[in-house]
Image (cartoon, rainbow, N blue to C red):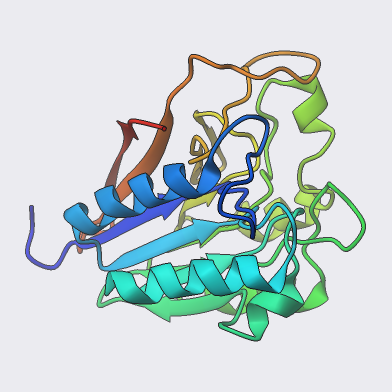
Length: 246
């Protein structure tokens, strides 16, 4: 691996609860998150990125517990909100969107939370951040919670990014927009659109059945994190790493 390669680990859809004994759809999500965090620490990334649906119960104590675990990890980290989150509570601890540059890449984290909706939406402020990043010719990784593409599940596609057309209007002529990573769909998915590879990552919590028209859980599907290598040449590589989900 090239020395200047930037290593990023993505975790998504934690669905944590303030009560350490509480279960989310039968899953002990604190335990599964801690398993994912332990694996992430072994990988020692330059950035740990959490792409939303962090707190199922939207409680301050849940975000405080998560913040404490992330700070104690010693990793550089950022988080983004999903439809289940409360960005205002997140912002009290750390901003819920971000922009940073490496020596050769840009990384933009967008807040797609749309209050009172399961769908996502990028408001004018978020679209402006995207426009600004696209004025830079460096390769760009964009992260958000809601998928801006269809993932071949009718029920999930109805709950995706509501203004995806505006998103792609900005990206369609921008070859530096190399990667779009997201959560929300609780399954692995990939497709290209224009110049961008779109990637969904399985949840650290529960998984949904792929390619279905209605809601369905996939009890046999494994939790995973995504490891991304952003290379100084502008190329990248990525893989999913599955882990035991208690």
